[in-house]
Length: 539
Image (cartoon, rainbow, N blue to C red; front, side, top):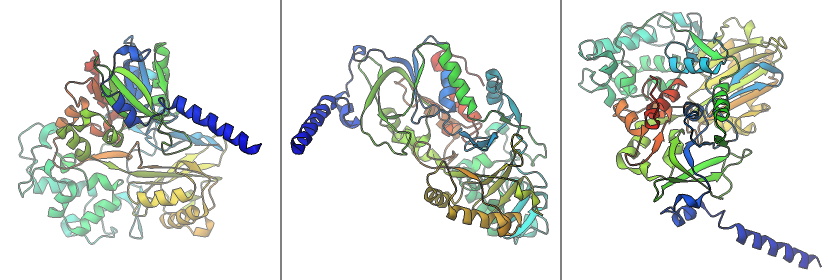
């Protein structure tokens, strides 16, 4: 009796699978079957515009196009809006935003972002931690505590040559002043980076910053720069063209702001207004774009695989097919590299996509505590730079709703990221979780060092939140430009990779003004594509 029942159930399952097999074919097989494409009658309705990615670039593009009287759909890989803007709050400290991604911007330099935030009516406030060190910022390197304005002086724990005993900004400026033709190259400052040569005759854009430093600085001076600078990659692997300085370092500081409701409220508000602007507008979550095929009628078939919120990997090969007249790819470099679309396989475009920029992984770790024990440190400052795996440590403040509960950004690093991924994964996941014993042991060890406080006086945190920006679809926290490329040429080519296709890339990975480590760059990338949709570009 039981055997008969089991066979009956299995038979029913086989019938169901056979019935639904055409819907859930593997995407490659499905694409091959439909490679030539059919007329627009194949689908009930095609999007006028399909936007892939609901990060700040995708939601901003949708918001800009909201009044075009078009059918516009956003397709998002995950179950949330924001991409690399990711705000959470600890349950016991809901009034402090824990920013796992972008967290600040510069009011004057990032005017497009600031104006957009103002149009959205989002409240802003001063980001008291700033965008860099102040004179009294604590620096902990080689076991020595000193203040930032003491770097380059007698307390600096590096064996520097007499002419290298300077602040990092002054030292790097003197490399350009003394060993390149930056002062005599007669072109506008904005273009100099592509014409300046060093004494050996090599153009800046054809070499890395590290290559330049190896010629003109001692090994100890290079370690001094790398270990005391906030982000390791920004002064090593970048194209030297990005580091070109045309004037001595300025002491003027720019106002740094943040969004009072959290940085991820920017894309969320952009999305809300986009959806409100038209009944045909929509967003579809858990859609991972795998391929694009142009049809005979000039439209595009988009092939997605579903993703699942409780998994980092796509566990189903069921294909979802959509169609659109135009496509905006508001995704990051790694997802573009993996996308099966002929426009991205043209030789020059493929080179730009895979070689012109490099993904830089980074990690963040936050702890909440019942009280701000670190403020008792004899070397306390609200921001600490160190040569530990933490790299940057911030005092994120004390709750006004439930004092003295406080938040500490323990770590923000673009080095040792593989180690942090290993450690955090063992502590159960890479987003938010109760901290593990091993994690507590390691972090207390280094917190004791950088705050010069006995390890046994450091309490266990009450909550932890972390993020490792390394894996698909993000590929990194930001991208850096590699040597050998003239940036504006790459940016222009990547905005519309195929001359014959209405497929556009608005990834800030290829932005040459605010660059990919600022959210403003994403908006600038979108604006480059807007004239193709009949809108005037906002500069």
